[in-house]
Length: 265
Picture 1: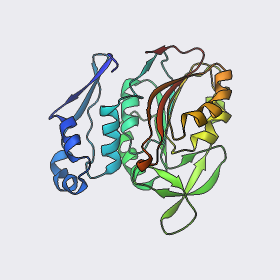
Picture 2: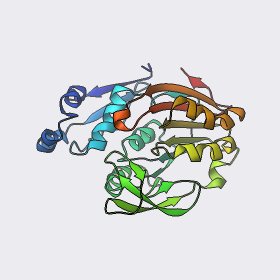
Picture 3: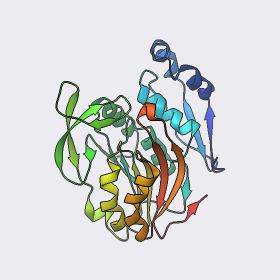
Picture 4: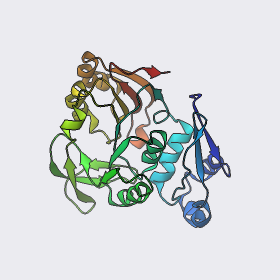
């Protein structure tokens, strides 16, 4: 566990998560009480803004559990002080909240395609400074409309049917992400689409860049498409790997650092 941060709870949220994570009916019943519980983080001896979650929503409970149980990605440190943070696949905005609290001077641009999750992301981002932005969209290599299916905690590509919905796919602003003088953080959780996106953009990113990444391929497959960024001087640091085929795994958490960034282990 990184010594620079810790969780604080009132009352002990970790115990509640363990008890209620797989009991959605009980969570819905208790939500009027549970949603009043503040969740607090301390980071480098600084108290971050508290927030609450909607315990009825599986994605909010899962994202909170990820930060509590693994805390792999968002709290791992580099010496980069970013000017712009892209939260790509922001879900309900818990990750956005944590990133904004750690880097209050950075501009945050968040993307989330699921309508319900996007509404909660918007609500959370209204509490952030006005210069931040969020978009109901997916991110890819081409501007187009795609069909996605909501899996409850993420999305997957789908053929048009009763369970799918059209989503606008947008590209990132190349003037920003390929500006050699920029200081960027990209948090990317796009349910398998990173395999096509990353080889195209990472070698062109500024040397002062950090990518906080969840991949959905085997380690051998990731190594294959990470090769071009490794040749460009980016370092891939594996933080956690889980097979979990019952949940569509494998899953791996990485921090990818540019040549001018020092990763603090």
